[in-house]
Length: 238
Ligand SMILES: [Mg+2]
Image (cartoon, rainbow, N blue to C red; front, side, top):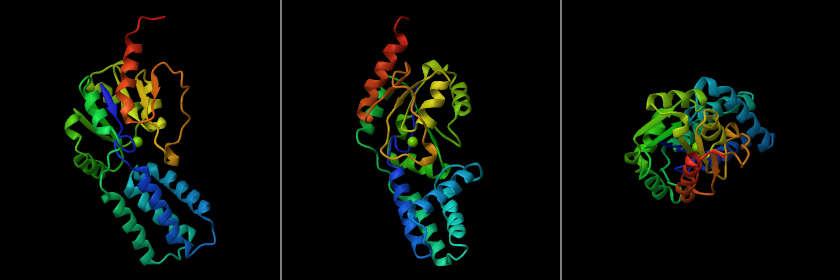
């Protein structure tokens, strides 16, 4: 079975967050002498502290922006500007789903050889809406929106699938959420890096020589990478 991550693997996501970050900094400029880097750093700290309370996704991020804005402005931020932050969050929830180049063809090609599952984290409501809009839902046997992508979550999913980890490969952009937990369990992984990574997803990439990992440049290279991993899986030892 092959699992696909969704945000920044199937469709664009982090770019919208990066734009929202700049817009947020713009809203605060009227209040602060701080430079944008300090605003950014404080927002990241608030977001990081809130993940365990709000979980992942746009709604939690919007609340973290409001919290950081109140704190950084010493409670001087106006209701009108808080309204702008809320509007920015709503726009993030409603942007159209834009598949990355070559994704449809790659998922179709992989789906001809393996059953597919989509595994994503974030707001349930938002992720379900994006899955409906993306036009790929029919290619996946299962769609799993989870609250965290750690070894425990993958182990639980594999148990539900009735599958040993060595028969599972995960394709995704996040080393922390898509690659390391699956390799840890004894599964396989195809890393497709995206040009922008959220600070709380950053992690050290495992050694490129890892036996059960392939890193590729784009979606079009994913079917070939899975073929290469399958060849390693079935190669006689030594
Ligand atoms: Mg992702």
